[in-house]
Length: 353
Ligand code: NDP
Image (cartoon, rainbow, N blue to C red):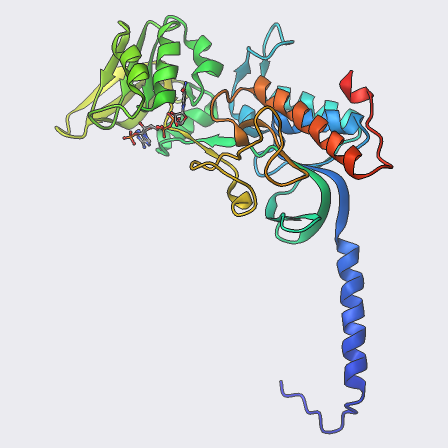
């Protein structure tokens, strides 16, 4: 379409532009939300931070992210979280935590933080690429994701809760006196294989190279454990099952191409974790793997007013209970930060009870 300006009174143009600009400013200020406390992530760390922040009158808003409930929603039974003597399923536990956070009026929302800007006095965050939020404090609880091999049969039994797991400490107990396999050759795989060896009849370690990546001491520990068999140069071809649960694993030697089937009821994957911290790159100090570096003994990051809790900063413990503990720390640190910045904001005593 061609627009002709021949008969147009050009003196209107600056006024029209001014009006458009004013409208734009009004629209922008309408869409930018201001928050005292934003919590990103809905695992045990995020919900615990929410419970404490809400009770401290910080009116937290929590965005659940792409996997509401976090990693625990991929776990069947949680038996090691204190307070549940009969155990509880991961999804149920996360629903209870959400209910508890909402009881104190945490605003729990669907949505995914796609961009942040921590360069100015106000911390800016964008939800689903569009909605902009300005926050006094931010608690990052975005967690980490276990890496998997990615083969169809592994994913199938993982989703079914039928014998594939990336956490021996969480799920090893269900395989007492049974035979299991574990993939990986790093410190995690060695630690988990050793943990499983105390519960299970036999543990077969599948190592893709002819050597361990793990530290000598950890590798020696598994080498010297009688019921751990190590298969070097060995990769997984298929996780075998009856359609419901795992019954074995077919592996192949990547040198000889020889295949074999190993009967197991549990298939553990310990090939590393990836912290969900990509959007914070360039704003927060991260270690070489991407974990957020916190000030030791606190939840503080290198940016004032931005705090971290849970697995996004923890490659060592990675437990629901430790995530919850650091969620509590982050809320208390955020509350103290707010109190120091804003004289009208009183540190509540309720959150310390
Ligand atoms: P790592 O990255 O150290 O090890 C991953 C392992 O998985 C490697 O052996 C790798 O093999 C293997 N792997 C990766 N992809 C595949 C695949 N597709 N198929 C088969 N094998 C695969 O991860 P970790 O989780 O073990 O450790 C992470 C960090 O945490 C490390 O710095 C570690 O030292 C630390 N850590 C320390 C502990 C402690 O001190 N107690 C306990 C646990 C972790 P390859 O070697 O061939 O690349």
